Amino acid sequence: MVAAAVFEKGSFAVAEVELPPLGPTQLRVAPLANGICGSDLSAWAHTEDFLAANEAVGAVGSNFDPERPVVFGHEFTSRVLEVGSEVTDYAVGDVLFTLPWVVDPAGVVRTVGYANAYPGGLAAEAIVQAGGHVRLAPEVDPYLAATLEPVATGVNGVMRSGIGEGEGAIVAGAGPVGLGAVVELAARGAHPIVVSDLSARRREIALAYGATVAVDPREQDPVAEWRRLAREGSRLYVVEASAARGLLASLIESAPAYTVFSVVGSNPSPDALRTMSAVQKNASVFFLTGPAWGESRYEALWRAYDHLREGRYDPALMVTGYAGPHGVGTAFEALRPKEGDVEHVKILIRGDLAGDGLLTPAEAGLS
Image (cartoon, rainbow, N blue to C red; front, side):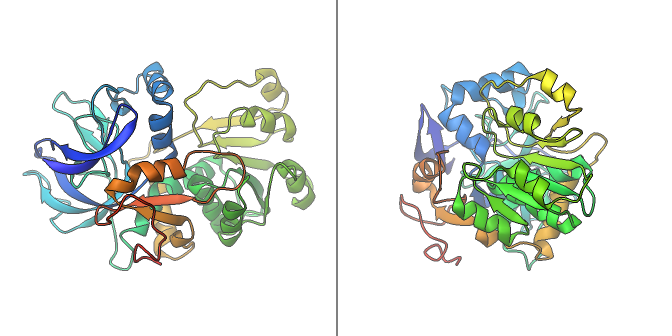
């Protein structure tokens, strides 16, 4: 049994949970820091919609029984405690950015953190499959590296769009995923990079990560801003990272013809758009997550790690708070989507922190 922040019947509590036995091709790890993802917020606040969306496409590996306890957490770094008898690529003591996947005894691939039998990063220990993880270099902060998953998601949206140097983009939503898109766009030499977000704090971080301008869409139209700054005749690329209902449809109608849309923000609630508008605009729309077709590893994750290791962005800017296991419920409430400015961007959970409230980075010893 291990301690964990357990989600059950709509609320969190710290309790002991059972850890599955270690398989021959698996690792037993101790999570160091765990990021709260937008999908975690959906699973918490809109559980029925979250489960229904997965069920509709047969994503059984990401579904859980809401009547039983579940331990969230799929964005985490960890230290290897034990390796299975057939594992050769990892060793006890390795510090990893951990890919949250595991194969259960029935052969079903489960997402660690969304499986009742496999506790996620909000537990003191977890079982994961021995493959795909990033072994962190000694100079990489093992706590801040927990931001890699959302950054990689944003990087993925840019990589899959095919945008090149000197071409312009709009990033809708400057949460951790959108900020990851900004990092990749800046690294590619994209121009202009127009970021749109309601939060002044997030816009400020986007500028620090390389955005050309960052606008409040209630006051400035991001498409108009792109038109003002882009070279004549250039193509527009849009990374939709906000998951705001109705936004994709609105952007398709306001963007110029032949715009390429990469949708990396997901909302479990149904949405709608006019397909005729998209057809008339010759819009290219990609919905994406994880490795691309034919990839043998998640290339966007390794690209994001390269950005982190080379210092192309400072992850500390986006980590605005920390909490321990008893503060998980408070952290989720602080990240609940709301209109206008927000106090927090990314909150990391660390098992070594005490108390039931939120801590600033300085209070957590990670200023």
